[in-house]
Length: 141
Image: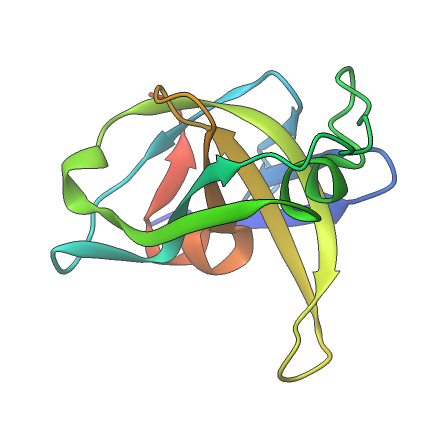
């Protein structure tokens, strides 16, 4: 079984994946990833955020790279959040951005990816390393 090595570049707004020294893939804003399989009724490392109220003063983000997406989408307003249901398995979603954020509990860096859902004002938040490592997120077939 091949293992996937993920190198994360927050400043560039992209990540690179290499499988057993054979293939290198750069994933960035606009690319498509596939939702893998959930071991339960919901995904453990993928959450769905639906913005229910916009404050109107959200900062713009760089739509070419995805840099600043967190501040633009999450800094103001109200949200409904839920774990992503396993019915999403197999869907292909577009990458909106990637960032390194600090875990509020541990202070450790977390590689986060935002995926565009089909529903308006809805984003899939992926703890990329854990989601990819568990098979909940994968490169498209």
